[in-house]
Image (cartoon, rainbow, N blue to C red):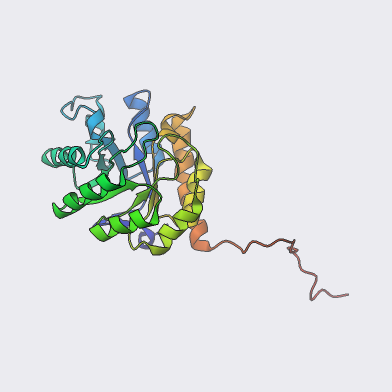
Length: 259
């Protein structure tokens, strides 16, 4: 890919279209190896699930603040707009809240987002100058409302968080992509490299994932696979696939052959 095909989010331009989470790994060493192998330029951190003050060598915060990546703090674990806004205000005070991932959960079992609370929090955060990337249901209407509020991207789920079920509703994603004027980043549900490639082939602008790498039998190898899948899927989208047809079409047509 070239600079002209970079992923632009707000005022930021990234060459990698893969955003990777920092949770669920066996160790900080494994986390670092996987993040490096993924080629990601942006990594996301659950603010409510890490010790933000622990900057010692070998700690997660020491790793993510090493200036090797752009940090995308997220509000995982928040169930109200108020909780999410307060969490990101704290991140801003700590100097790690330029880009932010807004996540307001409505149900602890499915981890589906609460649309009403997400929209409410997004309005406040955009007004306060945050560059907001909201996790949302794959609903074209919700995505449109979030874009109208001023979110810099929309991040519809492919399937429930951590499920690894892959792209459950490609048709909704197509409708979202058809209407969105901001990047569409698939967030949640990707389980393996082919899922990431499918999302990118649909025209999605990026992928955010965590569990698919962290819970793989070989996380570092899976990180490499995801890196390649995102690039391959993007190239396939730009190339434009051949039309599907019911019957065969010979690779070497007989028309024009010399008797």
